[in-house]
Length: 231
Image (cartoon, rainbow, N blue to C red):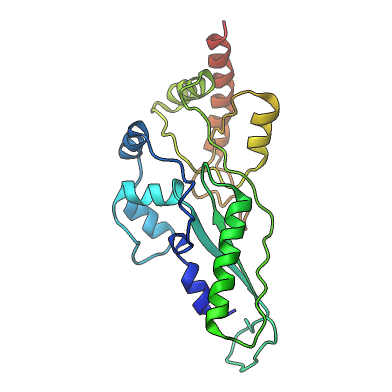
């Protein structure tokens, strides 16, 4: 696969129809982004980027959390060691993911992307074989932050940490969350207890002692507050 094909999909908006099923934003949600405690400068420095596509906090958060986005995360087959060997591989595998948002469907997105890439490859007129194939997928999960479960979590955060929590649309890829919600018919809450630099699921994963201790307090307080809500 040539970089030209990757370049064509580096922005999810290039794929025809990719935004058709994205849920519209309400005025209430627009206001949430304005109050979130987030530093564009600190984010830029943490990811090691010299420049971001936008320096506007609200726009950046919406693009990261509210719109479909693409990540290139693997290339197999090409020489990747040190030095400058001129080895030409007979086969190269590229890997990328598209993080979808409510109300997008994985099956529909897979078809749109594969059809788009196949059409691009035909236009190149290459004698090589190009075979796009989808991997695993999952539906997006979204909860009602105004229900008793989330209100109890917010009160617990306020009591333990002394600040009102922000509501964000970022929770990694946890497909089981939606499964729990659908099977139980109950509200599911993801309550963050760690730090942004914990390196979850990667090398040198950690959890600060203070977050561990405060996390225990937060969970206990949350259960107490949730119990009060159902009295």
